[in-house]
Length: 290
Ligand SMILES: Cc1cc2nc3c(=O)[nH]c(=O)nc-3n(C[C@H](O)[C@H](O)[C@H](O)COP(=O)(O)OP(=O)(O)OC[C@H]3O[C@@H](n4cnc5c(N)ncnc54)[C@H](O)[C@@H]3O)c2cc1C
Image (cartoon, rainbow, N blue to C red; front, side, top):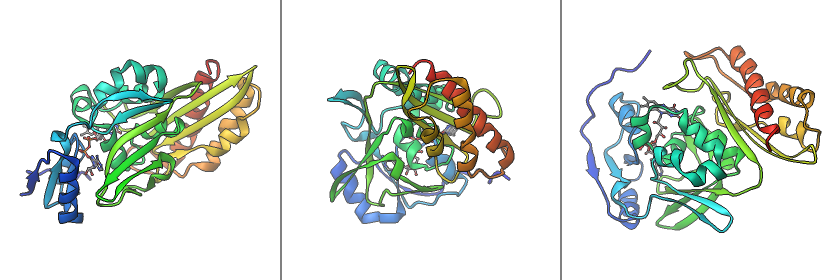
């Protein structure tokens, strides 16, 4: 049953004008503070009393936290860049098409105008739509704190629902995507075509050479406690010929890897079946173009 939505509880609010100021506030308030990026997840959860905070630290007045650029062989998406801007970015469409596609299937235009990529990752929802494309693109996340910065592969970021390796004093400031030869795509099955959370989502990155799969990465959402890579599918395909039979055989392996639950959106059995269907379809889609 949905929790009752009430007005926002009384809470302190600060909008620091530098990262340094934000780090000091985090140090002072520790677990009592919550960072605010777009607020599309945080504010509804606070109204439902699913998240409690004494202090909201709004990151939106800190300069330098938005923008998309190529530096060397990496695409850098700064943390507070809105999903709408990422979806429309020619750089993202060209270098990370699976991410642009995933954002196109998220929420609604007004929410995408506010919501950010780091907010989506920090919810650590198994159904967070930017996670599967970023996993197959081998993305990294940059976290900064008063102690310095560290860069962690996204594959090591999620620990469980609403749990990540991010420490309470850290702020996610950037998503970094290595630019690679190959093609990527994303698919989402929901209970309707738009404005819905995923029942199952899948992303794939594929590079083919001389009719063979040279590189294959598959990731799924909403079918395990964290967004996950389909490693057995990948192993089954790497080096093999690009043909439908191989794809069907490899996609079957995903059933051994997913650990879906039954919830209001779908049963575990349905999710397992659909994991296979989406894995097969996404590989058929990118396999011919990699
Ligand atoms: C109607 C509706 C539809 C939605 N549809 C979808 C959907 O289809 N797919 C989907 O994946 N999600 C969906 N969402 C969830 C949400 O919109 C997204 O997860 C969004 O990307 C969150 O980003 P935000 O910037 O608004 O995050 P916020 O709400 O600002 O923050 C989310 C969490 O991240 C933390 N945080 C924010 N910024 C940082 C930072 N820089 N460093 C560390 N922690 C930080 C916050 O403290 C909070 O815990 C939907 C939400 C609504 C209300």
